[in-house]
Length: 267
Image: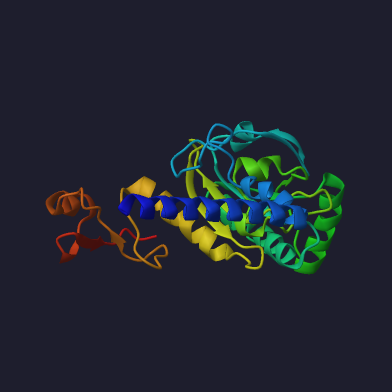
């Protein structure tokens, strides 16, 4: 009796599986375009053998590209400077235009921190040159940093600047547009900080300056920075530093908890 019941159950499962398989085939035949688009989802996250994962502290991948200021080898361009690489979905788009104008206006602030900027947009050089004229006119500025021409998205995919949820947002060639990415790279060519924004959200230039200040302060002074920190605010003494040693190094130390101690190093 039990054997007969098991046999009937097994036949039922096999019949259901066969039915589901037939239904799957029918769906693929009825809606071929849906199933043909699925491989695009893999473009944003290639296999590890094709693209190394970018992690904080890893060396920024090198590449060669055409820019509005000539051909570059990216590692040569870095030239032992702090560098901000930031991407834009496309030329002549409203949010990107306001962003590039704002960054251009802050050129002196970035240069004072030994930081150079390089933009990227998914269009060719001729389009970039025309777009820069609009940016300068609208923001009343003079954009001086180079913009990479990444019409084939080679750099965008190398740095994973593509939104997996928006791979349907493609150009006439069927290539997905880039998102708003920010990479802060230090003089050792190491990726120190990344920010990712959807295409609909503009970046905050002051926040980019703030994180540069925080990274450079931490490197120079051996401290960390708390929430909303700006230069001149109290900094945090790392847990690895004993309080006695911190007093010798920084002078006054304010202890809130044994693991949370503040000091001030000025601006």
